[in-house]
Length: 405
Image 1: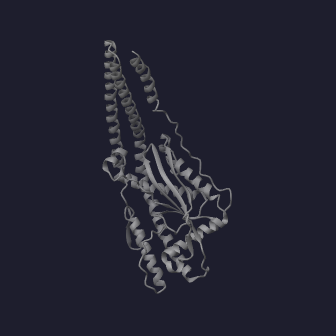
Image 2: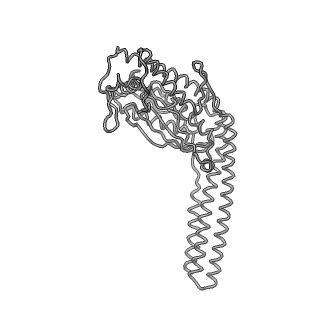
Image 3: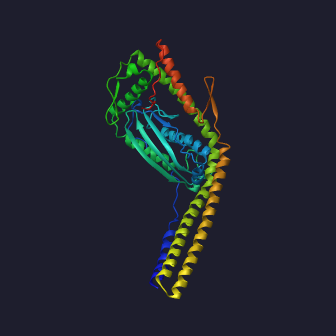
């Protein structure tokens, strides 16, 4: 009787603990603005920031995409949406110089923000972000996550407030916290290193010895050219042309944001409740499966531990009860899969509207989905050719070194 008694006592306790895993979470819309620096900064002290297009993190395996409820086109649209929204929030603080969305890391800016989308639906979002300055100093590298409130999808909610506003606000505050640890000399050094590394990309021979890298991977200034150096003036003109290109792309990201936001917001609003139900069903299925397994184990154990017919019968009851719980769990799992399919259907509806768009730039049609990085690389080759044509020289063979090294 002791074995059966122990299981009869433990099962309600375990079931209670497992069912307690499904809890109610208080969700609020954080509408407080990010922090602003208390120190007045001169224009020369404002660091330019580039927020690179995020890694969409779309699984290659189809079954894995289904399991994670990842809609490739929606996720790729988010990889542009998140940087654009982060850029707007950073720009609104006044803590920085020019803040731009960039196709990929570049030395044209002083600080680069890179990231990856870990998970995203109308109910929750998680991203991984790294912020690095031109010297190679990593300001931060961490994960941010937040749960949305249903009120964040109300029509009355300002467009400047995102469902996951807390993520962007926390990122902005973290970046400011590090910025406030820098002295004027630190800022000058970062800006000088960025300019020299950019110059080195176009003329390794002329600027190779201006920047050195320490054993810790930090870039330092060895020497600086004169401010009226002709080569430096050409580099600065080239840099301004890259800024013009990036600003043109920024206008595209603005238009893309405006076009995608209504359908994207509808998808998130519709998937909000579905995602909550989906997660609850998964938790319930797991709870019932484990409870059923424990019941079967307890029932079988009681049968083997006693020759008493009553105990044997009680053990069989435990086995049957456990099997019933497992059957219920399978039903819940099937129901959860139906909810996942519903989420995928919602995403598919959004995909039809989130198709890539194109822009005209200097008589070239540029597609900002999949090919924008290639176009950016092409622009860099053109600028490099122009740089040497101004000098009346033949451009040297391109280095395989990546632009952000």
